[in-house]
Image (cartoon, rainbow, N blue to C red):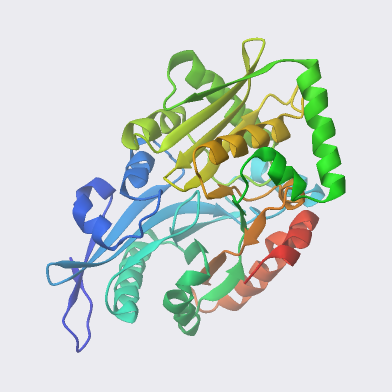
Length: 384
């Protein structure tokens, strides 16, 4: 236990290596009521994500929970945001010198999804205690960078003061969300521009006339189905230009076991073969698409991206879901489908004061929108 030094009652800080070392009732008293809560972190701990080392910081005011934060230690690839020809160059360099473009970083938040921090009581005191815990871990593990990853504007009061402590505030990849106010898919189509509506109808008609695409929705997957899903996931990771985390097959198995009733696997098959999948987290009024995968040998021919969206939105409407959230990247089709974009922010600092100015300049150059023209278009719709 480490203690927060101030004139106020001492805040005690517990640092754990697994979230299960912290009583669930303590964590849940202060952490936001979101799908990515205690049981989600248990899934991360249980799934052997070797590129990350997880830490959990619990803050107590006496015996009462006052704050909670999850962190992960990793070798952060400095070329994460880069796409196009320059990415091919950095990939070539990485093959010869694997660590030259990576730096050890301790990051508050999650490798996947938006960040969250639990705060009860004095925000400044709790944040100071969390930051002290992070500094302790970073010193022990020789992490060069401290960061808070993918926090929305509701955390500005808690995180903006970090700028006075050497942190830079950077734009991250925004997430996309669709407010569902339609009684059916036809009403949704009518809300779109004429050109988009015509294009979607043409795609759906072509796909529906070519082949029967079956949809199964499952709470869990096992055996051969799990392997098929994981193979499509790996194909998608290989094709994607901006990967960050690499999941294990155990993650897809464990998330259902740890979060019963909150996980849905959407499985699309053509002639019995898995053609696409989607892993979603669901609550009474929100669905979050976490991972998708496609058989790219047929995905374009059958417009599987849009078939998958149509079926998912129909499911949301049928089940009274009010908000449909979908992952970062691939912004152009989401813009055309009339998703709104919500900004997320990264707060980061290089712990070495001498190198910090160079790091700050590098961060500006490596901004995501510098390498993604579709993101620049999408940002015109962002409400800050």
